[in-house]
Length: 267
Image (cartoon, helix red, strand yellow):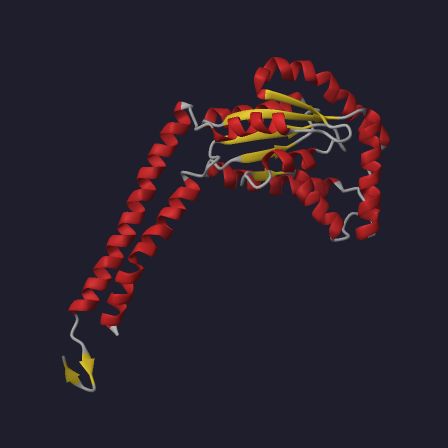
């Protein structure tokens, strides 16, 4: 049996190497490592639809508080269509934990937000940039009328599917919308050509915007912090792979040298 194990190991050794290298590739050499896109805009602007057209299938990790909020709606845990402060706090904590896991590996991120609070947008982007991330901001915008109509439509659809929909107070929706519009000049000043504004009224051709996003996504990391991190982690993971393969080879060689028995006769 040990000789058979050695033969199997020799046959599978290239596969072990490939599998181990794939771990390195997905972590350190992830196609969009050190890339972060903040997708912002008023409620009902259609950020998810635009994101699907621009980066769908790219492998960016979606960091979105609404993912957890909508899960509660689907589970029938949102009484009256309004999340409680405790539910919102819990979902925020889950989102931050998710973010921490992904950022620890410097994986590409798609961060969903509103842009209503400038500081709440700038601070996490700056933190990522300090780690070596390249960042851009995409503002998906619509008129106030369209924003309110889409919110109402989404709530009605959720209610039809799950028995309840998320209700956003009208005054909150309006004030949030106005704050986002007032922040646009500041965003332009802060991010310059790294800010992409998309008017998402009606049928929109995003072919030119996709080219801009693709160029950003496909450009290799250039910041010193990113280059140093990739270099150090590539060396470390490469060493771990080498140690694993060396151990497997020693085990296989030991199995080959061991005496073999067949029907009680030493061979």
